[in-house]
Amino acid sequence: IWQAGGHPYKTDGTAVKIDFTDEGTQKYTATWQKLLDEKLLAPVSSWSDAWYKGLADGSIATLSIGAWMPA
Image 1 (cartoon, helix red, strand yellow):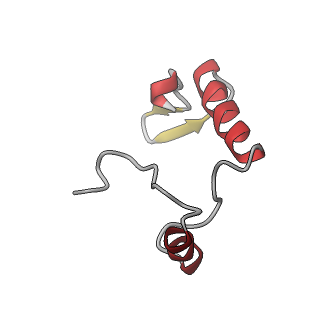
Image 2: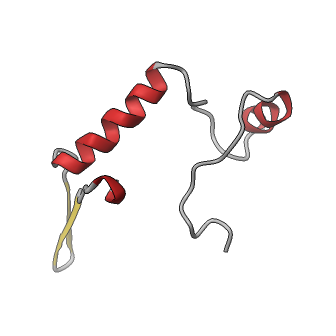
Image 3: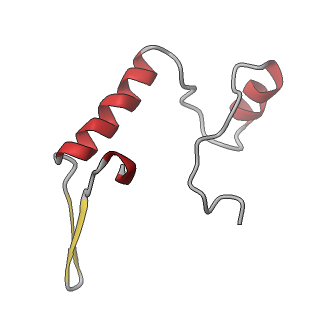
C-alpha cells in the first residue's frame, strides 16, 4: 500500500482511524484485485497444506511478503 502512495491508517492519540479510500490505497487494491480476477494469485494461507501443495506442484512459485520476513 505504501509503495502505491497509500496511507490508510491515521492516529490521534490512542485512537486509530482506518480509511481505505485514499488514492494510493485504491491503486493498490485495484492491482491486487486484477491479479485475483485473472487467477494469477493463489488465495491460500502461507504455510498451509494448500500452500505447500502449490509449491510442490508448481502452481505457486513465490511468496509476496515484507522485507522483515527473513528476520
